[in-house]
Length: 313
Image 1 (spheres, rainbow, N blue to C red):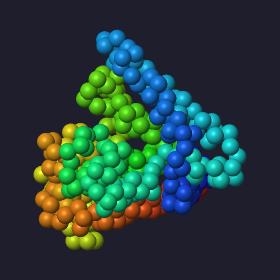
Image 2: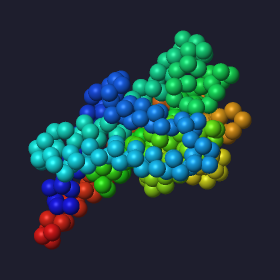
Image 3: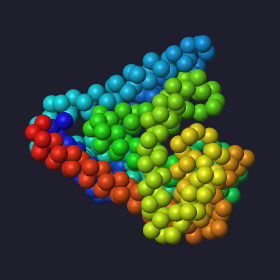
């Protein structure tokens, strides 16, 4: 990668964050991720395939989906002149992560609960796969803020991380893989066809999840709660299935003093504060980690570009 390309990646990352805060995610069936979801919905029905072929179908269609979604991003990067790339790439990258909309969806749950619990259940049902019919107010808040915390990695840090390494193609592939996991990675009739999407999503998010935890600990160190965040993470991170989401949720719960609860499955954190008290701190921590990652990534990219330029590559 030549120096201008390295520098452009940093500039595009910063511009994409600004675009996100200004416009968020338009609610349209023609949004690239909405089209991606529709395509996954076409092939992601286990009933279409004999049981013994479902795992193979999941792998083959995973490859096809990643290829089709990533190809336009690859072609644009390869063919667009520099000025056009600089103008359009922030919007393309914006399609691959969700920061403002993540906050909006969570705050919509909080707002709905101010009306009544049933409205809150309806709103949070859009964010989580669990049965929301019997959730009480605290459990609804927990589900909403859990979704924000988990997606801090999946929907923000991970696509930005892979963009930092591989440009638009990396961010697009990340978005495609994460969307397949979100739609198919469950222990139900979709388990066989969603096995490969779920495993690759775990691998894809392994490093970004740990970057997220590190940045959370740095943020909480400035607020005097890093030691508790670390203690809760060490104690509770394995309570949630998977090896990525649990560490982020436990660090967030410990640092903010709240408790995440999925009835009958796990309880993470001590709950020294209610989610009404600590919810705003979760939003602030999410914003801080996003900005910290962007600043660090841009500094590294600019330094890399300068180093390459100095040695004449």
